[in-house]
Length: 62
Image (cartoon, rainbow, N blue to C red):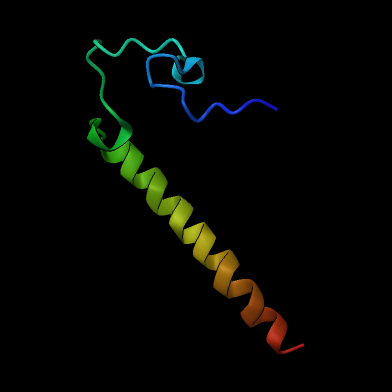
C-alpha cells in the first residue's frame, strides 16, 4: 500500500469530478417554490404523521 498523505489538493484527482466551479448555480433551499410545492409537502407530512402515530394507536387496542 502507498502512503498518499503527502498529496496536495492540486494533485488530488479524486476531488476532480468535472464540476464547473465558475458557473452560476443555486442550491435547493435557495430555489423559488410555490403553493403547489407547499401543498405537496403538507400532504406528505399529514400522511407520514398518520402512519407514524395512527398505526401504533390502532394496534394498541388489539
